[in-house]
Image 1 (cartoon, one colour):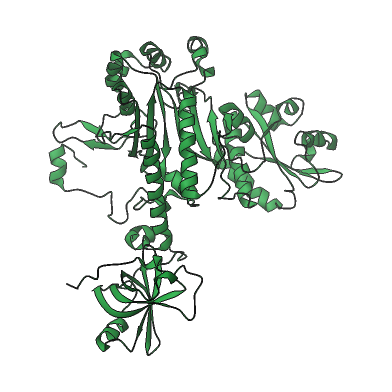
Image 2 (cartoon, rainbow, N blue to C red):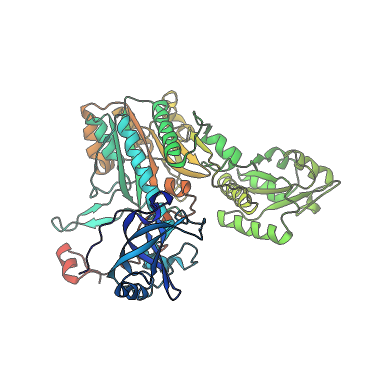
Amino acid sequence: MSELFKRTHMCGKLNIENVDQEVMLNGWVAKRRNLGGLIFVDLRDKTGIVQVTFDDKIPAEVFEKADSLRSEYVIGVKGIVKERSAKNMNIPTGEIEVFATDLVLYSEAETPPIYIKDDDNVDENLRLKYRYLDLRKPKMQRNLTFRHQIVKCTRDYFDENGFTEVETPMLIKSTPEGARDYLVPSRVHPGSFYALPQSPQLFKQMLMVSGTDRYMQIVKCFRDEDLRADRQPEFTQIDLEMSFVDEEDVMAMNEGFLKKVFHDVMGVDIQLPLPRLTWHEAMERYGSDKPDVRFGFELHCLNHLAEKCQFKVFTDALAAGGDVRGICIDGGSDKFSRKDIDKLTASVKDYGAKGMVWMRVGEDEINSSVNKFFTQEELKEWAAEFDAKAGDLIFIISDKKKVVFDALGFLRRDIAKRLGLLDDRDFKLLWVTDFPLFEKDDETGELKSMHHPFTQPRLDQIPMLDTNPEEVLAVAYDIVLNGVELGGGSIRIHDKDLQAKMFEVLGLTKEECDEKFGFLIEAFKYGVPPHGGLAYGLDRLVMLLAGESSIREVMAFPKNQQAQCLVTSAPGPVAEDQLEELGISTK
């Protein structure tokens, strides 16, 4: 065992004010350079790098030990801070160096399979397999520290506002919440299973019944669903619930939280109150219920023009109850070649669109993919709907309303990205409110809750639950940042008769309700306050504020796209005797 040099300073925190001080440092060797009578070592810890210099004035055995150092060796150094004659202003410690007087080697290291530097361009799966090395990179250490700062800010804010942090169970009853559950077999109760929580929704409502009044939790949640850049099988929520509140109270509390996070962590002052869009307005203008409002390209409804045209693609879409809508790209005609347009057309097909019409607006005429179906006068009438000018480029899609919204919602953001209009430091927050209470299942055509069956409908629309439930709006709200849903919530149903009506509209029998939600229904018999709340995706919040494009960059040990932990090789097989204890056979 090596002697431990008790650290006096962190490497990246040394500066000109430490000159002539004796320091003890610990860390990893980032680089070693031998210039004969001088050996330079870049020593790294989580705060940064400092240059350590070994010269021939120190004992020979210390100099020889320094000469044996290689990348990623773990060492301790004792030395004197000196001002550098040749300063390196590219790093925070570039004005000084540490002249070593002693050195201890804690452990050697083999050549790492990945470079410990930010711009290594290594395959992500290799990064995830050697995540403990990947996390040594300065960027990854910054991201972990940044996440910690947001978590601390969160706890401080909600503590200051009277919230109690309460832990809820990880092993729960499987309840329908929109995604597949991860199931955990019970050894004590063969054939029975726990589920890992998709959210603490039912427990936080029972905490309101319990009189907790204001609850908060930073909690792990689990959903067995296909992965993408901002989705993981296990993720973290900032979860909260409040009693005796309406939606204005919940939204005001959360605006205060966001203002504190942006100010304390980012040094950015956001203006309150945040702007709001209704769900209907967001869909009509942006084709998305999480609109990115950093740029234009808003949707225009063209049904009134399509009704009187002879173009069968448009008229068939209207006859089937669909829509014809488009977007206009200012000055886009010169920025997108025909080949570019073909690629954009192919991309919208991923969202169900069968094709896309384009129009290039010129000084005197309009060139389009449908010239043979329209006169120039008709094309100019269509262009006038967008206030289009010479040099603009118009894209039009016709199909079922959902397809049109999804395709154009994607297209406007994809084009903005291609044109370099998405500034990660331009933070545009807004609320989306007045969501539909129900939506139709694509496969069965049956009504299902857009959020969950405990969401309160607008009180003035309760009679419509019997006559026109699809038109009923929910007292629900999402917080959106730059086209990403940061969080969402609602006011919950606290009246047991209204809750029973909600279950009835969803087609749930009393037996099904008792089986799925019986414990909550029972709790509601004993006095429940009006309550509501909201949950943020912590990983998404950190990702966006850190300027990353994937939540894997702000999680310590994430899964890959196949939901595998490459460090531990999970999921993996288990011993037969373990399965036998659980009454499970994989044969």
